[in-house]
Length: 297
Ligand code: NAI
Image (cartoon, rainbow, N blue to C red; front, side):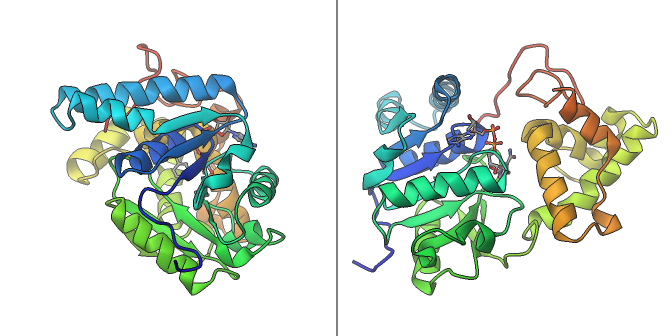
């Protein structure tokens, strides 16, 4: 076996059972990996289970998978708060909050639990892969795998080698992503990589226009109908989560040393600080009276 190989059907650990971790776990289980889904919060694990059940029920309803197949997929995912359960995994993908010190702590604990040649990946949107790998034992097996929301629907995965990443790690990660049905785009370890770097001024300008009094629905409709985007920028930030999106914006702004094109918008900060986090909290730019709608695969 190649040193950093991620064999088909080998166990995969996913850390963080939020929107992204839940989607990543689903996609890994869909192609046959047993999945160990880890979170510090029992409540988050339970919410994640409900969200997966809902997503699978939708797929069965639309005839995309048979009921028995959906049940098998769900049974491949175990949920736990115990990081040591990652010990058998050949690949761990971290999708916890976008904070360097929290992610570093997760990787230190994963490295202690897992084989020294198992691949460690971060789903970070905006932190440096080199910075996350620094201090992790055997950083040559460390890589960025940046998925998009909703993970079962979005094909693109940015694959980000950091300063320490070995070519064998990149090859193993790209091969795994292809097996998962994803389009792997290898990108450089710069703040925001490609997609979040290009998208930052786009979101910022939409927030600025909204802050000037242009209705959100008008801004989104313009981009959807005339611009051809599947979802307008403000609706998309509600899907991403205002807290997640604001954290990424702040990291990209810092990463480019405060360049004005990456400036932070007061409207974004206000939503985040007042707990209006978008779909997951029931209110953001828009309100979601039905509670917590989940994107469907
Ligand atoms: P989320 O807020 O929905 O979920 C984060 C989960 O991590 C929570 O369940 C929380 O309990 C858990 N967590 C926090 N600290 C932990 C720890 N020390 N150990 C284990 N679990 C812990 O966040 P979301 O949206 O899933 O984002 C997660 C990561 O993915 C972030 O780095 C974000 O930047 C990135 N990302 C987010 C996208 C989005 O559209 N939301 C898109 C692409 C990347």
